[in-house]
Length: 370
Length: 257
Ligand code: SF4
Ligand code: SF4
Ligand code: SF4
Image (tube, rainbow over all chains, first blue to last red; front, side, top):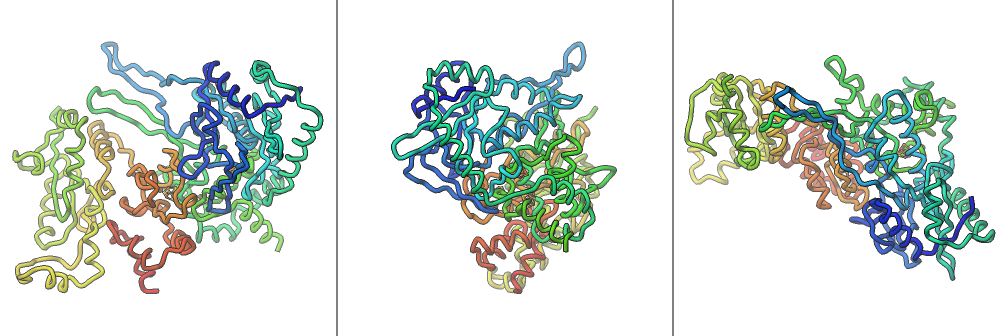
């Protein structure tokens, strides 16, 4: 795959080309002090010169004048809300002369192109693909959104302190699942991106932009920038060790210590780009006697989620936290062949009381070793 | 099939919750079509005697007269639904439960001897069997509609008991506590409002009372770190749901520290 040089103005062309091809283009934007994902028309909508500083339970935005367009790591919004919306109608009924007719709800959707997803986002999408498309039962709504997605990943040169994708093998450079991958380089005299295609249509779009090829020096700059990024990550998690630690310790007294902190608020599962648990709710209307069903995100932290035979199976806080961590980092391997975690760090930042899964695994390991 | 009859009753309250029923402008006709409103003084002077299939009860029990009236209402009602923070936890007037009622009466009323009141403000469920509770100060009118719709077709209404945080994430509101350091009661508060306050960059005030498994101590420790003084935390827990057991127990402990 030959790499090309993309100037910031070419990025505007990329947005234009994608919308001409019928895509609604989403990209990172700054909204109420948080980098999120929303519709963009041009690079002017991107959060220029912004850094995001994160620690467990805290998120700060800092403005700089360096003009980088992707100089932050990850906001709370992964690809999940786009591909797997928090709430959607599943089916409706209509009363007719012939009786009740059931209709599956197929919303009118414009294909979406996302510019500025992160390598961990692409990896999380692959994890969700396995869960939602990999088995005998396909999530048709997800399949549609997924098929129509055009994904421009921007590699991470400035990971946050909560990121640990390097140890999970999912970043800071994307390896698959993208249409175009960009790496942003801001030198004293030049500001440009090195672009690479990951699919046929990605290459088509790059060709349409008429870009100059990247020279070996630029490719070397990319390599070094991403290596520095990987080395700078403060957090690590050993997925293989986590797999065995967690599955061996369902009854360890350590779990009880989580009771003092975990709020069972479910934020971690909501922001996690791989969590896919849902529930369905009946909807009936008074007037026309139609009925239907809605699906919404649910969580292993909610009591109702494990409600069986008259009571919740996971009543205690520790049983719910253990379920989340054990599934995510251990039994996910048994179920889907990979870890359920891609190391994005969102659950660490957006836990209102800053519970850090990498720390929890480490503590559990220490307790066992002690 | 005869339409189910509905009665709406008021105890110590501001009327805001029962007005939610009238506030359902778009749906009101369909509601009126599906049920027979037999007693609803806020809406109509027409009154039919009981029994009633469903009673909506707003307000808390604060007087000796309330004690007998709630028994009468219970006896006449098939299903009794307590609506709002007053009816489900005692409301903001339950602040009296932490103070000396006689002193209040002396200070407020010119002729204290005319006042017949109980020392406490308590939830309807503290006195009679309640079939369903709708939390909130005020309740969410769509939750009320959901209850009416569910009752009419005989299904279980969908009423969340998880935290407000889930609603924040569902609507894509970024967390005010994490992003802005604003103290928020959302993680220990029951969902139902749609996370209105965080959507306006305010912390949750706890209008819907405790969530299904509130970890008040953990949140309190985090509020300490955010720089909230303990008296302010105590006040935050002592608002519309001051008498909710989890809020009351924790705030009493913090107040004594
Ligand atoms: S478990 Fe946490 S770090 Fe891992 S993918 Fe989910 S949100 Fe990201
Ligand atoms: S780990 Fe944190 S975000 Fe997750 S449920 Fe517990 S308190 Fe909430
Ligand atoms: S703003 Fe409050 S309710 Fe919303 S997620 Fe944060 S802590 Fe929870």
